Length: 534
Figure 1 (cartoon, helix red, strand yellow):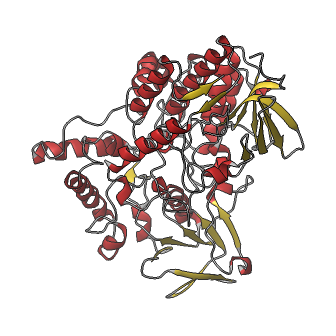
Figure 2: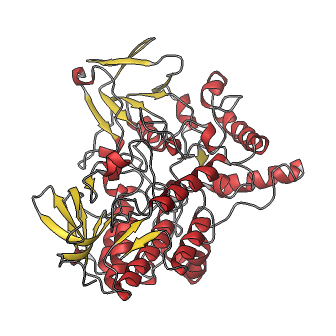
Figure 3: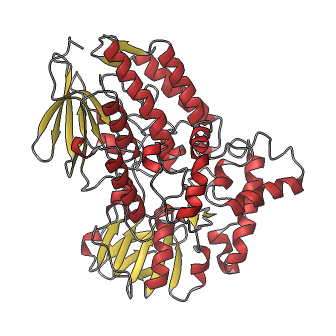
């Protein structure tokens, strides 16, 4: 890489979630001078910021952890779906075992990144005033790095407190005895609601679209149990790379329409009892491609949920007709969500019938009256995929920002790089499997590929790479074509960018991790075709 000017480090990673810490490990292991910056006080990525009541992962362990033996060999979990506290402890353990701390700068947020074409390096500025240069800029911000706050008139007049679930105060928020209103019933809304229902004097959920939640089937785990199972971990971790979602199972090969009704119900029931997201990712092959197969799954879900709620709430929480094809919005996991609506202290507002008009001093004003509250929880999601990257002022060689480049929609080669932004590769972002894939699996698949790419560049004396414009356009079109073969475009969801006003509509995630990995490996085998290298 003699053509490049000296830099402060070979690679700068931004983000200390699974992708960031794994990539830092791989690059340090390969002899690169790699550093990591993160604005949080501790590693964990979303598990540092998401510490609201009830926050926990929706993928079970050991699927939801790194496959490195030096990490899992002496680590045990307390429950099948860990909560945020345990996940934070896990990330500290990871950084201890991999000896990453000397290379990590926490509490430092990157504000801008500017490519210097003449020197062939990136100039990175942080909110601490520090400026460093690096050959390779590797943002690992995740698909949910920028929270979305809806613009509701009158919020500044509210006499109580309000918080977005993604920016929950680190000291916590007392729920006991309060009048709590939750706007949004996605994953975070469901999790907060289950906790608030136990403690709050009054809980009101404001729902726009019913969540099609699946049973978590949470279980405690013991250390002896996990020690006995660790002999199978290498096979489990190898197998998860061979699935579409990076989980423990692939979807079934047969159509839901090809099997007898009794067999179909047997499969549905087994997936339901297994818990977690299995009813979503291990279902029949045509769950997300055929309306008839999808409707069969929805009807099973509806008939499972309805006995748990009062008849007057059937059409609000589990309607006869699906609000969207099942699984085209990310299913949430629940433990006792549907039971809370039988409690005297819990109310539900259907925003389709009574939309929010404004916020007043005493609470939220809908078309049907005032929801009195002293705490508003905004469970309103994220500018998924692009948001974290676009909130950093990233500028390529021609001075154009990434936000400008993506104004009309995201375009990226392999879900890694963007034409006009040399020596930049992001992980777990748009047009990669990201939101469709288990985080740790995706972190390892992508982290290994990027590490091997940088090793190859070093071995060949190449100091600059940039995706070709035609290759980026072809990949973006390919991802859209795959999406059009599914039912995902038929739902208004964050998968399609629908939750952000003015955001161009496109499927932001590549639908198959194993298919994605196969294509990326073929690109590498052909000398990294699609990249301009010099």
